[in-house]
Length: 226
Image (cartoon, rainbow, N blue to C red):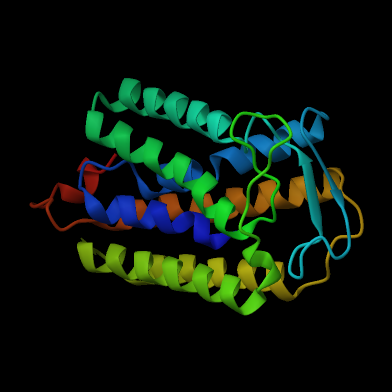
């Protein structure tokens, strides 16, 4: 799952005017993948290409206890929540950010083949929706577009930036689904993933600077956004 991980970010931004900026929530949505690919660069966590691993994704994610175990994801969520709490002194913002981080494990549990753990170890979990391509693609598009629509309804401002953001998300997702599969796992794959996250996160910060929650009023509302 790629853009589906940003659905909780859109939803959190829509749910409360006290939520962190959309760009910050985009970081939260993919935080454990940021961690995984950085760790993979240094050999701390590991993956390999295994053609046929699933019908959609040829990844054998065989060692990722620090980012993609439920316990590991919870630690990342707690740490990110503490950073947000320190930065904004706002418990609601901290809680929303933590929930978005932790949502990553649940969404991966739906799509991954069994390769997720609760706290490391050999027992693995995953419903394997990647073996049902049309189901997996439909889920990803539906949750992303529903959350995006809710965000658009709950915020106001120019429509251009969020439309550009969604267009880029859909373009990247199409490349992810229909582009050539990587032949090997290595720095090129890891940097490509990190760069794609950076691009959409930068666009999300741009969107956040041009839109504000409808609960915020007054001419200064856009400047009051976190």
